[in-house]
Length: 639
Image (cartoon, rainbow, N blue to C red):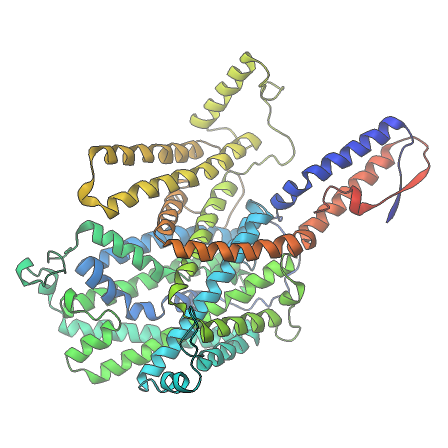
């Protein structure tokens, strides 16, 4: 309860009451769209100890997991043949588009939280919460699937000892759950959680060791395989190819097979975004984050490219083992030592991938908790270790529980939704901020009167001005509120056009033999609004903000990134979208029951509003009696 003096004049009292009512009615919309300042002066409580090498190793380790030992054989046999190298190239280009967007934002906003914090400073609190909630899902399921793979891999090396024991003594006959509780996976997850909780530098040091050893094994496979390569395996005649394995040659499944293979290979590059999540703990984030993102993606591509080249040249693509192609090919040549080295390398890769998947999860929780959107105790920083200690252990235990009791084979696609949605949001944020207004105070006007829409002449003048600003670029113009508004609306509509384009392209992929001229017409027609929207954005004046790193070819490169991500999301099955909707529903309950009222930005807005009221009171010269105004009932930011 705060005592403030308000003018006794009835007109002022009415004015104040009207303002309070109006502000209260619009407070909900303002609440979900309130933004976090880009330049947040709050001092970080995390230790800045990570170098560019640490961040690069973290990105490589989290991405180059067991996939490097599996994907090349799987994609070459099922989708692309020897052209799997082109599939990896396309996937790498698509990943680099997303990576460059992360690099710009990491240099612009070096805070823990990755896509969550980027959305918060660009779009608003509600969308940021949804993105952060999705990131938690992505990292939790990603970590659980990796540790489950590690447990399964070790168990196979020892003739399924754990599986047989737990199935016999502790079976779980429950649908959607695992056949037995995997206590080994739970224990390993808790062990890694403790390592991460005890310090960022210490945990990244362990990750560096795993990553270097993993890269060493990859290099060994490439060099050893070069002694047994045969270029004729890239040009096998059709008559020598078994039924069901395409037409032979370099591209046995055609271009469509290469594209399908690229969609699968794209998921082999997921994980580099953990670099941006660690931005608040980097010594020089504005330089090291862009460097680490680009270098890690380049090295990951070279590893995939080298492995797939050697593998498809050593034996024909249709003879590959889908689950363990590298041990299989070395077994064929009788290289027992190489087979064991590859198995050890897979262990290192899994450990590095697990560390990389678990490291960013508590950072996202910390960022959301520090902003008041998640429960405060989850984001507390340890005075001794300078890490989100509670959040690390809690998320580690929950991740281990998922790995121990759930059958994760049907949940892995949910991780893909969270990742692709985050990628799309980051690219959209890059576009919005690149064209943000340089004029933070004054609204743009036309002829000093604003855009008039009250008469036919006013409508014509407004339309004429808007069309000119949308399609004709003024080289000397500076970004303003109107150009920024045009960009924001264009970016929002661009997502809809990408969705429609993806639906049209899906028909080509599913029934290519039944495509008619009308389908080609619809395909071309769906491309028109995509190019038009990007062209409109490109005509707007760019913000003059100086950045340490900028995405090149804006808006085209981020636009292509959004298009690819939306298309890949459409390829996920309906059950995945149902589970995703359930997860979102849980998040909405948390936000509207806790986050909306406990938001730090809400408290700041409330203080600003109260200050405005007091300032208005002080400017009045009326002599009035003092009355009490309840700040909770009169402030516009009650939400």
